[in-house]
Figure 1 (cartoon, helix red, strand yellow):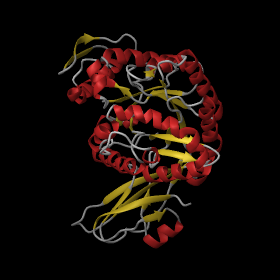
Figure 2 (cartoon, one colour):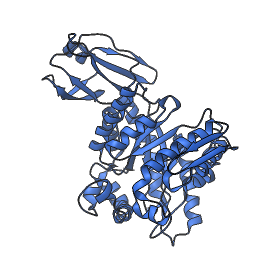
Figure 3 (tube, helix red, strand yellow):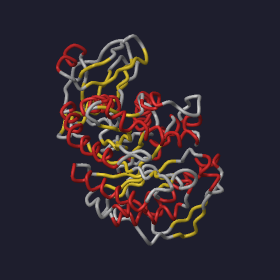
Figure 4 (cartoon, helix red, strand yellow):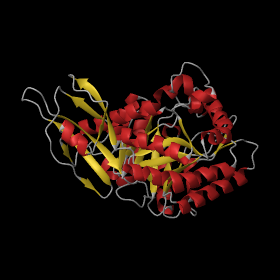
Length: 430
């Protein structure tokens, strides 16, 4: 398989479905290829004739292309960049969702074992999500869980993915994340999102309809508390009068932040919030299908470019992954547990309020299709290569565990993903 980029027509009749960035592409289509463009993602052609031949360049991490289209003075130069990385980084998403009657001390011990196996296999990061523990499931709090796992995660990045930020006071989050950064030796990543579950805001006696403004204020206040000696702040939700955070993070000027977003507006907001030079990035929701994520990656790219911001050095993508001997085996082993997890999310309104499926629950085939990368190592690698080429992502945040799933199945995917799938991906992208 060639390194490829999807090309879509915007204006005019110059429309090529797929172009391989190889010698043939340069010779046949006269692509102008250059390096150091601030944006990565889907290349969109504009105009009715191809550009002139130029050169291609790359670095040790892979090829970085900018396609530039020159027209007459009456038409602007239109360009997009697409990044193809030969190296892919792995973060293990620790799913801390459990049944209330479980032996939760044993479940936490299993998470420690998952981190140990992942680190030995070659993962260099772990991430934990966030929901409140009420109703039918128990969730370990993310920052406290990461601190508890830090001893086994030596040298790995520790990320929240995502902390539902409006549920908390920003001072509390700022000091907790600072402690995580200290405990991890400067490896913390604070991933935050506005949240979508109305019941969680109701339980916390917060206005679900005002979560976005509360979210924006929290992000600003946390960053200022990390980087300034004293903070004065007056917002709709929070006030500060010469507030000083004594517990500062180890990373300077601050730890990187990941921003969640499931719709176009929230993806664009993530690009506006992100300081990509510090490692900030948007992370796509694992609940969305691959085609939607590809479109949203283009939105993130284009918004960054419009703001004059570079792409982050690492572009993470959160995906559900199950690796088995073959697709039938992987589906048999993981299907019931995937269905159990999404049954809970469906009751919270995921499919009606977020995904927009038009019905409260999806059957297993609908859940899997485009939402779970599942099959043999070769099948999983092929899907991930396609996503990497379509979105430019460079770090896979892999969720491999669902409600009630057997530990042996979880560890199998961890080992197969690092030992068999990753080498296949890197071979294709090299």
